[in-house]
Amino acid sequence: MPGMDGQSEIERLLDEMERSLEQGLIPARIFNDPEIHRLELEWLFARAWVFVGHETEIPRPGDYCLRYIGQDPFIFVRDEAGSVRVLFNACRHRGVQVCRAERGNASHFRCVYHGWTYTNSGELVGIPAAEEAYRGFDKSAWGLLPAPHVASIHGLVFAALDPQAPPFEEFLGGMKWYLDLLFGLTEEGMEVIGEPHRWILEANWKIAADNFAGDDYHTLYLHKSMWDVNVFQVPARANMMGYHVQAGNGHTISFSMAPDPNEPGPTFWGYPPEIVARFRPDRVTPEQYELARRSRVSVGTIFPNLSFLTVPLTADPDRIPPTTFMTIRQWQPKGPDRMEIWSWALMWEGVSPEFRERSYQACMASFSPSGIFEQDDTVPWPLATRTAGTFFFGRRNEMLNYQMGLSTGTAQPVTDWPGPGVAYSPRYEEGVQRHFYRRWLEYMRAR
Amino acid sequence: MSDQHPPLYHQVVDFLMHEAALLDDGRFQEWFELLAEDIVYQIPVRTTRDREAGRGFSQQAWHMNETWGTLKTRVARLATKAAWAEDPPTRTRHFVTNIRVRPGDEENEVRVTSNVLVLRHQGDSPSAQFLSGERHDVLRRENGRWWLARRLVLLDQTTLGTHNLAIFI
Image (cartoon, rainbow over all chains, first blue to last red; front, side):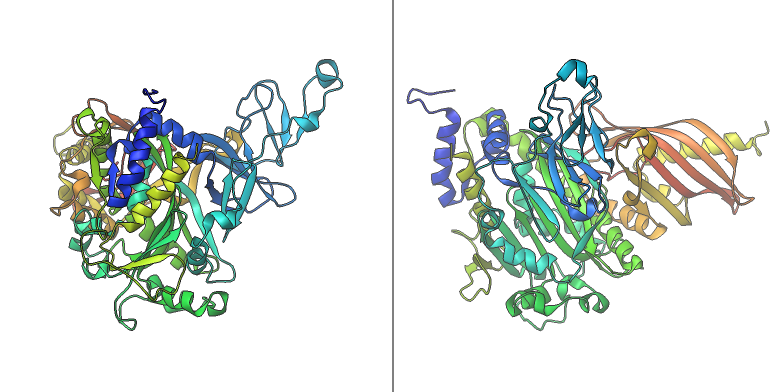
């Protein structure tokens, strides 16, 4: 509500955060506040480029999936000409969702209310009793509304709802260089395996985006049991060696890498030689290829709410070797204290069905609703959200500590980092999260 | 009905009730000992599909797709001192009903179909999380006792309304 100076409480909070962030302090309140949530839908999710789906989820003409940008429903569909479309899922007559199955194949979408019918490219082509009811009506002006901008990188499709949104490449900034080395090493690229996992967590979406932005520190304690049962081969402390990268525009990536470039541990995220043989050094620069070679684990967040993780883990340490998987996950806002997690497993196109299956198994066993890694994340995230909603702590704008690597610890800037952005090493550092929130503030304060 | 040889249906019901009690009591190692070494334990991902496209169960995506070895890892991890997802434990209640027993593919096996409702309470929340679905089990009689040899759980939810599947259904 407006104060005496005409500024709302939330505007003052965000102004204050602009200053406190430089000291590594973030007001807990932003993680559970109805007004912040409402403003995020309006100022962030309706303006930024947001992930919609992977092209391989809709390989044939007519294939579609339902997706959400913020909380707004869209149909992610391949039209008859083979183009990927992102169409708002609402009939232009009364606003009823024209598609109610979560996926399938359809040449047309028909509203159940009055039967208005649209092609899978969004054109309105059918109106019942059109002669009597709509003689002279210009159907061409009443097609399904498309997302104003759609673009893709390595099969990952994003859309922007703001007609004034910057070009996708500009939005990605330095992150493109890292996405190239993660997703672009083979000619065919990666494909999605099956349908995504979806589940509800009573936690604010930013806590998850922040965790994947480079909170490697929590693996030492929260995920201790993973080393107790031997599902990950790199020792916990050794795994903290590597780099945090603020790639620009709020995007971040964290690499687990040994200090010695010739360390005998996992290279290329632990992929076996027959898969590494598919990688084409000429598709990237030598610097990108060398980073890929040295990577044991890569994790990061594409601002605002798409994260990725690639790591070798095993579902059964006695019988199955650690197996590399790639997961992308979207933290969908469903309220100030509620998110829906969408999680996909990806694998390189053309690998053997056996490896593909083993990779899916490793992913499901560790990062999914049943994943023994991720299960433990579902405990602190709702608790932090609850704290953010309290009066004593949240409403009084108490600060959370994001100072690691800023005024504490051993992490130092890397002076000869070969890629875009700013890198720190080792990974005891929270600059990646501060980078995420700086971008978040830019969107939230751009009103 | 003789005490030593209860009718088959009663033996199956008794097995399922015992199994449910072990899960609800958090006796996961004892539960694990009910499993045949060739067990296949699956919970496919489901999506809402048009009626003509079928029931929407994925052939490729699973919430769980387990072997004896991967279930062993899960049970071992629950027994560590850092299995925070279940420490403090959530409180589950398995209700198994509508039990139908049919002959199996092997002479010593039966196919068992049932409905399962799992209520799950966490912390101080008075509201339960719900999971409901259909179980398709194979029970095998070997060495004088029954073993769970196959379980396929067909959930009713497409988006799971529980914070994780650190539990067994």
